[in-house]
Amino acid sequence: MADHKSCDRRAKSGQDLFSAGEPCDAIFNLVEGWAFHYQLLADGRRQILDFALPGAVLGFDGLSGAAMTYGVQALTDAVFCVVPRRALGPLSRRHPGIGLHLASSIARDRDAAFARLTSIGRQSARERVAHLMLELFVRRRSQWPGHRIEEMHLPLTQEHIGDATGLTGVHVNRVLADLKKDGILTFSYRRLVILDPDRLVDVAEADPGLVQSWIQYGVIEQEPGAETLNRGLASTGVDGPRQAQDGCVAPFTEVRRGASGAAHFGRSQAQRSAHPVVRLANQRCAC
Image 1 (cartoon, rainbow, N blue to C red):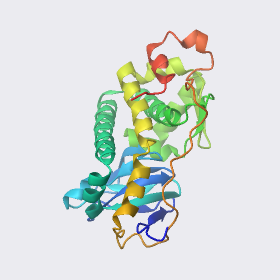
Image 2 (cartoon, one colour):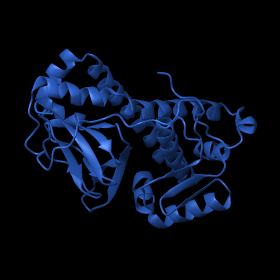
Image 3 (cartoon, rainbow, N blue to C red):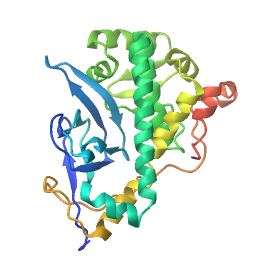
Image 4 (cartoon, rainbow, N blue to C red):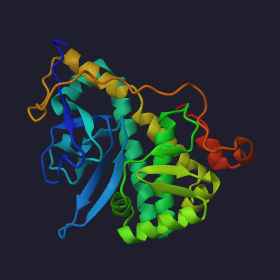
């Protein structure tokens, strides 16, 4: 630890990691907690662009030296591993796999952005909410392949869902009530329960290729590339940026996964195995 020069930044729920218009000379690996990218309009309305789960790498746009065009805010209390821009060259030379990890992260961000744009631009309110819930569930499930229960802690409010789907809070509440009434899912007190996976997939209009990209999204977020970033940074002897001085913590350690094996997306595998999307979600991505 004596030669470990980087510090991790801690952020409380609701605290910005950086804001639009600010310079950013580092990238950030989300070690613990959830965060989201967002943009604000002049009148204060917010559009949530993406949700980041543990393992995500944030802040690529700042590497060009230009001001950030969006902000990142901690959705929950979070810890970020800070990697200075000037350290990326030495890191990439010493650890070639880092470049592939970063390229994979950028590619899946683009794919997710295209899918979300299509959802917001062309889907109904019901389809948008189902699409978002299914995406977050599959991404999180792919990180825990041994988890077999169709529910998860989802640290969102209805306001977050509305800002991510372009809907008002009242409209989100109505859609969630309808999805519960129809026996598809329930979302209450930040607990998401999938009651009927097949119908949720149908409502979200999620094709197998899209679900496969979500599975890869979650797996990429949990790949050990971030651990290599942190370990490699220590080996370069490069100091972390001045802005990350609110407490040094231990180096990033890869989040433990569940027991090995397929992640089941439905409670009745025999009944649902024929659905192509469910089959994809029941497989751990081998990419």
